[in-house]
Image (tube, rainbow, N blue to C red; front, side, top):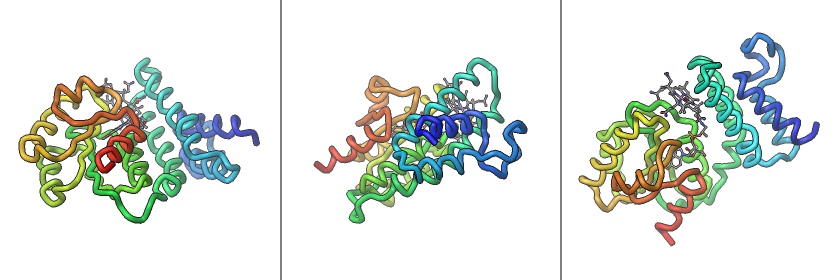
Length: 224
Ligand code: B1M
């Protein structure tokens, strides 16, 4: 099968929430392969994990987000697409995580309080780990207390905050300020669709990255 066709299959499965062959949803794809099988096949055919990520998975999520904005789909469909994306990402993980054995430092990452979006945060964690950093993932809906406790146990760590909702940007600001108040020397980087360089400056963070590669560049610059 052609590369383009395989990438389209994956995109189609994630967009429509077809997780794997056994999944009964969506009914019109019952008994057909899903994001799980097609991603495995694409890797076996030699398609690079970066390409699968950018040309199929992230594109699919953009379509899902657009459909949600236009009220063509609702939360359950978004959720099942996220499940399909995660099934695909399981196959990409080993490629992104095969970094150097000796770790460059510790990166603590979490999605801020009130926010349950974790796909982007997981991806950043995976790619940072692949770039040779140890990653401590605090999960989603993480408040200041949890970040502060983790930093308290690892004072030489770098901290990353992720937010996907405009409404949780305020929580990101509170968390950043709490961290900077108690640990002013801890490098703090932020990311996620609604945040940018200006917001970084506004909340007193040290770095902003639009994508995982940007996070890796920032982290590596700290030890250069
Ligand atoms: Co939600 N959601 N969602 N959602 N969801 C968005 C974000 C939204 C833009 C959709 C839309 O309206 N078009 C919208 C936000 C609007 C806004 O705030 N302006 C939205 C909404 C409204 C909501 C709910 C409020 C819906 C509701 O209940 N009515 C609700 C909120 C729940 C909550 O968090 N409290 C909600 C729920 C959900 C699901 C649970 C169903 C599901 C998430 C499942 C999961 O994550 N496990 C979901 C999904 C899947 C989406 C979309 C479709 C996809 C998000 C995603 O995974 N993208 C999203 C629309 C979209 O993004 N197109 C949407 C792919 C991912 C790889 O990209 O996360 O941006 P992203 O990460 C990127 C970069 O941002 C960056 O690197 C990543 C890779 O390039 N990055 C960092 C991220 N963190 C970083 C940290 C860094 C550096 C870079 O350093 C520390």
